[in-house]
Image (cartoon, rainbow, N blue to C red; front, top):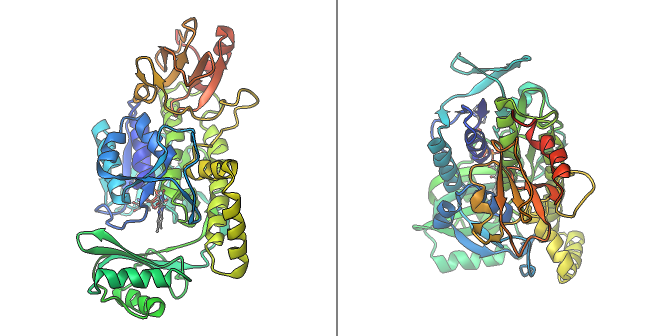
Length: 471
Ligand SMILES: Cc1cc2nc3c(=O)[nH]c(=O)nc-3n(C[C@H](O)[C@H](O)[C@H](O)COP(=O)(O)OP(=O)(O)OC[C@H]3O[C@@H](n4cnc5c(N)ncnc54)[C@H](O)[C@@H]3O)c2cc1C
């Protein structure tokens, strides 16, 4: 199968599919990885996803742990007993995240071809053909557009992307400054009293990351600003350009909020920013894309492998579309709360007071970290549809058993069986003080597909997610 775009969503997805032995090709327009730093961190669910695939140690080695504790910039404490083994934010720049995921995908055997610009697309009953800008064509059974907010794949499919265009724009970059560090800090403190969208902070090695509101909204944000533009905007907001010079990169971003109407037109699917864009407030975009990939990867592998039950691939849209719609709402709300207008400021004070209530705080933090996501698997136990947190078993940790990306029956009774599905589902007989059901069937993405202790009932649920029994 083919993935368009080697951003974080694309390489995560490629690894997830390849893990199951499927041949995966990633086509990326840029000849080299971008140095532009957009995301600065990962929230708990993304950290869990990395842990479930044995990748977390690589990320922890290069990242910094920070306490969870803010919604729309309103400081709060991490709620007690948050339902995760990873109650922290992992600070790690996006290029590092992309590099680590790319290395992992390549180790698994994913082929990444850079300098390949997808310009055309056709699909029929058997597969998808893409046209590249160099005049060549490629054919595969499925194709996933992970090609970002301005997705060519989405446009070629004619899938609607309703929502609101950017009303504001910011310039960002990594630069050197001649102003002394204390002066920079004093200027930032002063300007941020009235402009939350302004920031200049050290990134190490004498460099600073600058974010400053732009004068208007440009037509094409893929065209970077000039250093002179950044200099002028710094003067407008800070009264000084801080001696800005020698940019390593410059970029622009906006606050558009949009979502693709359909995530799966036929054999082509959309994931990550290609499926949804929203203001960066709260830092959820990259994580949302990783989690799209985590939901979709095993389903595509099942489709290619010929064991996907009816409707499995369609469940990608029905599960992930509502999740992103909710993130769009939450990030928009956060962006509004950061406004310095008197109305939003009044609402902000009220929200800050409400967040003193433990349950409100927990509700909001579960949203931002995505650990509260629950797919609709119908009526049933409170765990059904939620992902199971990592937990201690007598012989190790649950997530350590999930690296292969297969289904897993965690069986505390020792009386159940997955015979017939043993090639797709691991059977782990063990106990955990943290699990209060006799047994739980987990999908490869860790979401609970069944709980109980009855073998006949289990046999009724295995085919829903894992297809027909073998033999
Ligand atoms: C200022 C800012 C701060 C942010 N902070 C955070 C944060 O702290 N945490 C967080 O989770 N998220 C954050 N985000 C969001 C995050 O950066 C994005 O959600 C993330 O990059 C989306 O990843 P993606 O792989 O879906 O798309 P992209 O990263 O946009 O990757 C798409 C890839 O597709 C390629 N491509 C495009 N068109 C084609 C084509 N026709 N053919 C071949 N290849 C193509 C592109 O070159 C690119 O490499 C932030 C965003 C911004 C702007």
